[in-house]
Length: 490
Image (cartoon, rainbow, N blue to C red):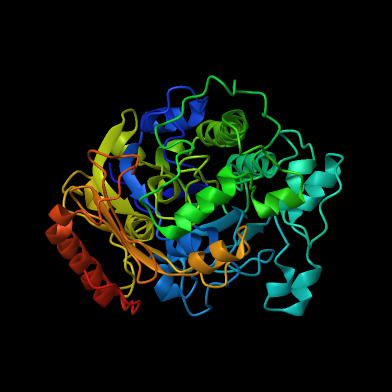
């Protein structure tokens, strides 16, 4: 039976690597609720964000457009008011609720077609479009006070505060969102909007840094698995990545985290392992709250008519290639989990989807399931036919970009200069990755034989024709999406 206008539950985490659950090859993490969802979902083997930093990526997820088209090319740029997003595009029959991180402007007020709005941060107050919004606190502050914690001052981000706040699980933003999302789902059928389909988007902050949290002691630092890129400087890669690796391997820390006491010894393997173990512990923190939300969905009797989407806005290096954070086009930063559960298509079985998909495709896919068509101007394509197993992704190229001009301080003037240089990339359908910049060492990786991107093949003369062909794919994509960033001659 095909359900018309099903409920839609979107769970979006922040900075979660693709290899953070068993279905993507992790053999040691406790992510049992993510694993349970994966066991009865479509599991996309290779999902990529459009740009590996919060605001641009979220803009693409919500609009089906690439960052160069939304104009949201770095953090602290609001989504333009004339660019429609998911809550505005979904049919008016839906009751829409947004909970958690927004990061696309005016964080604390209901907007963009959402009826219920529960915010968790307010440190972007100077960027709000109306002065009166600056006096509104997010409901999460009340949650903290109710649990015995004074919230951070609005000038202090959660990232720069939580590292020294010694929060319990229930006091974290994840703990708050697990509670309010479960309450919404459990009470909907008896509430004033019963009978209408609902869209609920829950945007967790974790496992975004700080690299510390209430589960710091969950994993044995020495026993966790690491891959061949762990603590390895990318000697043949781009200058910006070499500079960032030198900064971190030389003892540098995330500058925002340092302000809140989140410091780590990044000159030793023991220090890196501790950071990495605590990062993955924050994945488990989110997983426990996902378990609460999914239990509420089951007990409410609405699970059979609810599509569930689970993904993350981008990944995290966690020591691979000698780096923390994101802001590069490596797999650890751009490749993210994507699970889509459609009860009437795969209620009790897992279906793996090979090939590659982009975040821009999620919005049009959900709109089709909700019974409406996407605007012709968006870049993404509905993949509902893939979920119905009528077609596959075997010929799909995925494109990524970076435009970091005006980004925050990342450790040194040299890093800040080079991270401002733009990039365009393609992951071809035969699993090669080409990253192009006019201002830096370009990169080509064979993801089939070198999945950890240890050997840059760009200067290999045997790859010249492949590079030319892949560059042509980027140029054609640029023409289709009205992107005017210059590319180097290849």
